Length: 166
Ligand SMILES: [Zn+2]
Ligand SMILES: [Zn+2]
Image 1 (cartoon, rainbow, N blue to C red):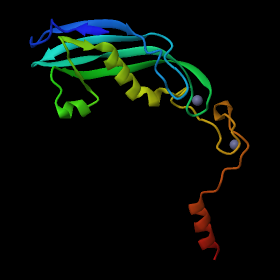
Image 2: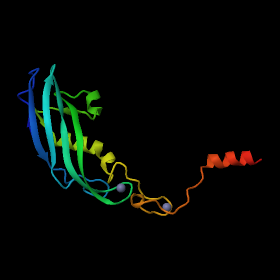
Image 3: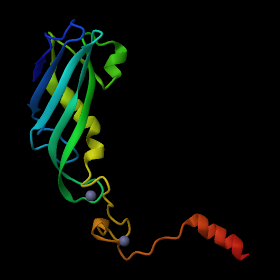
Image 4: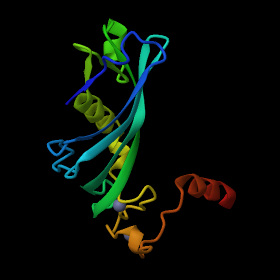
């Protein structure tokens, strides 16, 4: 999907707004395709001293499997869009994940959204940011309540206790 930039290129102070839907349903994460719903990208491209700044918000509803508790979840996600568009990529720029090329006075919006989305995906693949995960000993889902496992004493305290016992 190409977003035309003719109105802002070489026009300091000019800006355009955009609101598009991008299809990322082919995006793989582990063995899943978590982005089954359209991804909405909206924001502005502003020419600030002849630098094109794209700012906005990427929103979608994610269907996935939690990295911590392995439970399925559905969650709305919002990711900040804050990138720079340049007409000529320097070597430095091509290593910067926040810099995207302008070709024929347009930018590939899908590529921008896909890259930003993937960079932010890891932290989003949780059913809840506070997911307690599974007990490493008995495997119980700790979001459903504590398990019956005894807590292992901290080895540092055990060593200290030995010293005190002497
Ligand atoms: Zn979870
Ligand atoms: Zn346990």
